[in-house]
Structures are given as C-alpha cells and as structure tokens.
Amino acid sequence: MTMQPVDPKPPRAIVAAVQLPSVSDVEFDASLTELRQLAKTLGFQVVGRFTQKRPSFDAAAYFGTGKREELRLMREEEAADIVLVDHEISPSQAFNLEKEVGCEVMDRTMVILEIFHRHASSRFARAQVEIARLGYMAPRLREAAKQAGPKDRGRSGTGGRSGGESHGELDRRKIRDRIAELQAELDAMGTERKTQRARRQEREGLARVALVGYTNAGKSTLMRALTGSEGLVADKLFATLDTTVRALHPESVPRVLVSDTVGFIKNLPHGLVASFKSTLDEALEASLLAHVVDASDPGYERQLAVTEEVLDEIGASAVPRLLVFNKIDRGGDEAALRAKYPGCIVMSARREGDIAKLREAIGAFFQRRLVEAELFLPWTAQKLRGQIFATCTVLEERADGEGVFLRIRGEPEAVERLREQFGAMAP
Ligand SMILES: Nc1nc2c(ncn2[C@@H]2O[C@H](COP(=O)(O)OP(=O)(O)O)[C@@H](O)[C@H]2O)c(=O)[nH]1
Ligand SMILES: [Mg+2]
Image 1 (cartoon, protein in one colour):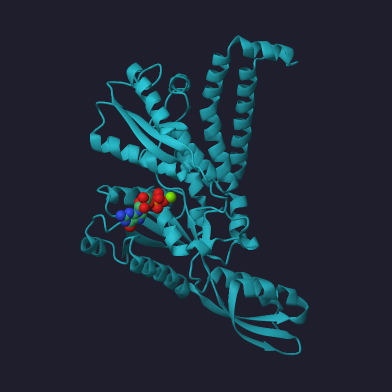
Image 2 (spheres, protein in one colour):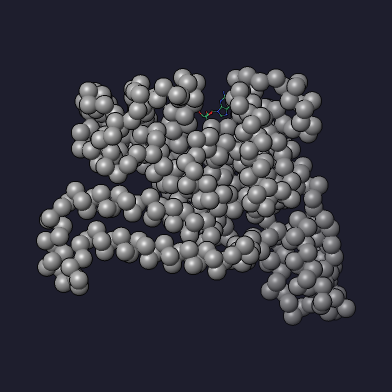
C-alpha cells in the first residue's frame, strides 16, 4: 500500500491477551480483533491467537507461569517472530516475557505508537508522536539498564564519561532533554501551526479527499479500490506527500488525490490521545472528508459520533463530509441508514458497482466545486504558464500583442491563487 518495496517475508506475529473477569467476551474479542488489524497495518502476518482468563495480570510476566510455557511452544510451532500483547505492560513484565517466550514482545501501546509514527506527516505531528514515544521508552531503557546491571556500570567507567554516569542514566538524561526540546518546539508552533499552513498552501489547488474513520471500517480497501494499482502517485510534484496518497483511477477531471488517514482506535491508551489527533492533521488539508463507517458493526453509531467530535476538535468541522456506510454486505439496515443520514452512501467494498458509485460521488463533488476565470498572461510572464496548466483546465487561449488571455476552470483555491498572481497584470 506504499511505494516502499513490499517485504517478501512479513514478520510472523502472535496476538496474545489476558482476559480479566470484568471484561465481557464480546469486548475482549473486539479488542483482540482490533489488535490483529493494527498488526496488519504494521505489515505483520498474524499466525496465532493466544489467550488466558485470569483474575489479574501476572505481576512478573503478564501471563501465568504455565501459560508462558504454552506460549513458548506456540511460538516455536508457528515460527513466530514477535508476540503482540493486547495491554500496556510494564518494562519488567515485557522483559521477563521475552526471556521466557524467546522472542520480542510488543505491547498494544507500542504497536499504536509505531503506527502513529508512520502516519505523522506534519512537523507538529512528528514532534507530538516523538514525545509520546520517548515517554514510553524512558522506563524501558531504565529496565534494560537495570537488567544489564554492573556490566553496564563497568563499561561507563572506562568510557570517559564524567561523574560516573551509567549508560542508563545518560540515556535517560538525553531523553529528558529531547522531550523538553520537542515540547519547546510544540509550544513555539502553538495553535498557529504556521509550517503546516505553509505546506497546505503549497498543495493548494490539488483536489484532495481524505478517508477517515475507525480502524477496520475498510478505508485502506476503499483506497486501493478507488485508486487501482496504477494510481501510485510517483509524480515529483507529490514527492513530499506521504506514501498513503494516490490519485483516483481512472483519472478524473480535476485530478483527485485520495489519502488514507490513521484509523480511530476503539481501545486507545489514554496517553496517546494527543498523538492520535496530531496524526489527523492531514485531514485538514483535504477539501472533502470521506467518513467511512462499518455499517455492520453494532457500535457504528457511537463510532460515527466520536469521529465527528474529534474532527471538530482538530478544526476540521468546516471540511465537507461524505458519509460512507461500508460493509453493508455483512449487515446493517440500508433503508434506515439512508433515511437517517440523507446524502450518505451505503455500499460494500466487495461490489464493483458500489465502488464505481463512490468514485462518481467523489468526482461529482469536485466537479461542482470548479470555478471559471479569465487570466491575462503577459509575454514577460510566460514561464508561469506551467503552473496554470498544472493546476487548471485551460478552456480557451487567445493571444494579442501584449500576451495571452486564458479562460480556465479549476479548484476555487487554485483559481484564486492564480488570480492573485496574475490579476494585477491585467490591463
Ligand atoms: N465483508 C466486507 N469486508 C470488508 C469490506 N470492506 C473492507 N472489508 C474487510 O475489512 C477488513 C478491514 O479493512 P481495511 O481496509 O484494512 O480497514 P481500515 O482499517 O479502515 O483500513 C479487511 O479484512 C477487509 O477485507 C466490505 O465492504 N465488506
Ligand atoms: Mg487501513
């Protein structure tokens, strides 16, 4: 789904969790299913599911003693490379579990942080996510240093470090400093987010639709279906865009770029809320938000409400919405949805006709938005022709002694921007 070469052998992962008495089977399954989906998002192949019912998490290693041995056997049998645990566990629990199971252990928080890290495209989002990552890493480094013990101290003794600081202490201090530095950066960016605005301007005139909604709603599936394998945006013009942006395919007029945002997560650790919101920055750059909802999920109404709330919070309330109820082949009441949400699309990504309808709805939205304008381009400014032709359709071109009259049609922002640049030149 990105321009990076596909790893021929994805890491094999086991999703694992302890079910506490207070957690219903339905909740428990939903969370593990979500973790499985998150693992896939990271490019893992999920080869096993491992669970235990327990009154509490084991203090030493999350699972009970006998179960850890069982997990080790499952890991060997499935040749798994990694175990993903569906809770946030302590550094020492992770360390002990790794030792007993014999492979890397990643907890839910780390999985999510990794996804956010990949999706953080603005400077603001990158700083926000890095702070969360460092905050998560700090106690884990402390644990690693503790486990390394005296050996660690011995090394630092000969390393010429002043004040007899251990590796761990030094790393921790570096992390603290880095967090402070990033925080200062965030504060400086303030609510203005100037850099982001500048970047948005750079892309102005490009018709963009962003797919938003919960993880597992079908965003990536729709993205692939809408853009096709030929839709990869390899253009130099878009080189700065993240790799989750592609052009609508077959190509429409105007050319529409589709981007896949990081999905909302049902079971989002509290400490990651700010990071999550920051990764949604890209939604603000779209002219249209296609809000994808899993119509077959019994909790869809709440998910829809939460998504809208968060979009409002990040300042996206003014961006037009296209409400897309997906997975109707799996369940959901089509007539009721249409009645309750006028203008919505009810569809299944499994049906080609439905994909075509969605593509049409998106195309129609951008067609409706197009405006026409006349520009005068003096002979001395001919090198700006490229910009006009790249962002608008030229309907008519008439030359006279002074230059060229152009009648153009394009996105309101693109036309406005050209007007600002060329309008002054008109006689
Ligand atoms: N039955 C059914 N499954 C779908 C539909 N759309 C997506 N899926 C499946 O739902 C799962 C999650 O889809 P994905 O696109 O990864 O969701 P995302 O997390 O929103 O990107 C995948 O297994 C898809 O094959 C649909 O319309 N019907
Ligand atoms: Mg996805």
